[in-house]
Image (cartoon, rainbow, N blue to C red; front, side, top):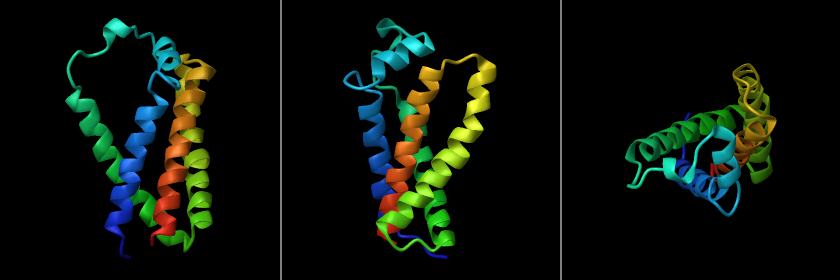
Length: 133
């Protein structure tokens, strides 16, 4: 099974751009901070290298996993990639995470913000990979 490394890299970049927007102050950043109990003063004053490094590595791992899932599903179009992304994002990601949030006493609002991001990212990444196989 071969993978298109360019599709994986572009998908990983898309993941991080979406994350920056999604958790930015213009979208869900303030609400997310409130839901996790952070204040503006809790935010790092210098560039947080470790979280961003983790995000980049995770994006690349997710890209490879989605390339495999798209290949296994025989994806050959944007729509095929979207379907694979929805199955992975909702059927696996959100379904696995929901009990963790429930047992930890996290709010439904936080779950929807985090999983909305995860599902969107997985669908976009999978669509890029499915289209660019």
